[in-house]
Length: 128
Image (cartoon, rainbow, N blue to C red):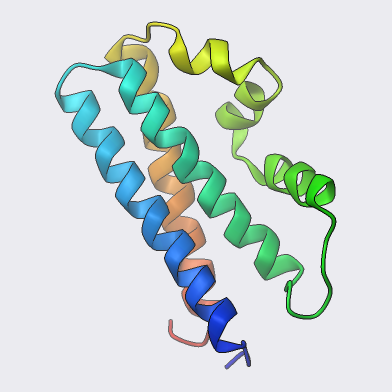
């Protein structure tokens, strides 16, 4: 079991809970036929899960990280489709009209990424 300061354990668990909620919201938006809102919900889910992955790789309670470095490492941790989105103007991407067919692969990728990150976190904390 990894010894993690309580506040960081809480932060890790809160990030992954937020990611799960956002993926569920994205899936509901897809069911409602709103691909744009689905993508808008899925993107921050990926950011939250990627943040957890960065923290697992470089525990912030051992050594701090400059905000620019953290932002770069989080983007670098994105899965394929979201990695490609991150190099574009996100404001334009996330406010453009998206069909549910176009957004669905992103939502599926976000769900898989969040599930994999959840498993990594649980294993890392000695809960899995």
